[in-house]
Amino acid sequence: MLGGVCGGLARRLGVETGSVRLLALVSVLLLGAGVPLYIALWVGVTRRGESESIWHRTSTDKREKEILFVVTIAAITLLIALQTLGLHALGVFLWLMTLSALGALVMWRGCSDSERDHLREILSAVIAKSSAGSDKWQSVALRTGGGVIMALWGMSLLSRVGNESGAALYVLVGAGALVAGLFILFAPWWIRTIRDLSFERRARVRAQDRADMAAHVHDSVMQTLSLIQRAANDPNEVTRLARLQERDLRSWLANPEAFGTSSSAPTTLRQSALAIEREVEDNYGVGVDVVVVGDCALDDAVTALVAAGREATVNAAKWSGASNISLYIEAEPSEVSMFIRDQGHGFDPDEVPSDRQGIRRSIHERMTRHGGSAVIRSSLDSGTEVELRLPVPSRAR
Image 1 (cartoon, rainbow, N blue to C red):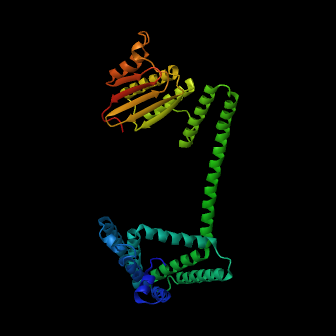
Image 2: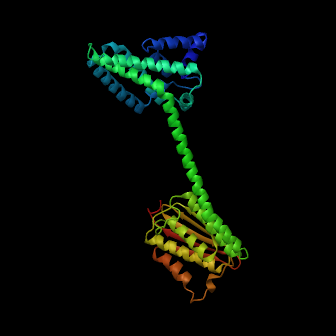
């Protein structure tokens, strides 16, 4: 059922699977001799539907071979140390269990993803069944009887320490039997308690999240809806309130813990673009659609680019008559570019009065001082596009 070894042997030999499993169970009871044999077949025989065995995958992987070598040396060292304590009576059993443990390590690290998922499903089913318990008196009596017998045997072995030779053997076997007995007795209760605590913790976290969401909806969304209702006759104000609420919801969903805290000055290009969005939407009631590809830290040149982009966005909000502005920013390894577009009235750049120096000083000259360029494309009734480019080698990321 674990690795399909008994089923594969049964099909190979032409016998019933139940007979092979019975023989495997008998071999396990013989000092555990059947365990390493089962794992050896599991590891060495290729699984149906796969092209290579677990051992082949492990033996061809240098890192896995190094891990197996280190673990084997540690296991042999431990066995030699136990032999020096006088545990000769358990020598064969300990060696068989060590071989089984090493084989299980190879099996787990070398098995395919589908086989590992199969083992996890079996383990989860066993844990769920153990934690659920059973109301049948036969199951309770069997578990209780086995646990009591193991615990009593362990205590009897521990009580013989100091009265006979080979005391270390009695300590090891007795302690193991006592722990096994207590585990058999109380494992269902322990597992059930741990699962209940886990479920309760997850339920408490979900309840807290729902409470936080309900509080935010009440404090923010409901209040905004009330303001929209009062300003129903002012489309610009309704649009401004709706966009403000949309931005707050996006910020809250992205980082609920930081929502509502005082934010420091922007330190990256992306943060600066979002600051322009907030400023224009709050002060002018014009929507700003921001798209930022890549990001970079702010220095003098990038800060100048952001300032020029802010001036172009504010001009579009104030004079274009458009209800929406597009702000596109791309940070590349060698250049940062920014595009501000609107579908408003447009204008003729050559006919701008000489005393109106916002475009010339705030955009063109600012970009030129930092090695960049600014291009403005606009015509009457066709909107405006401002293109800003700034070479910044090794600065964008």
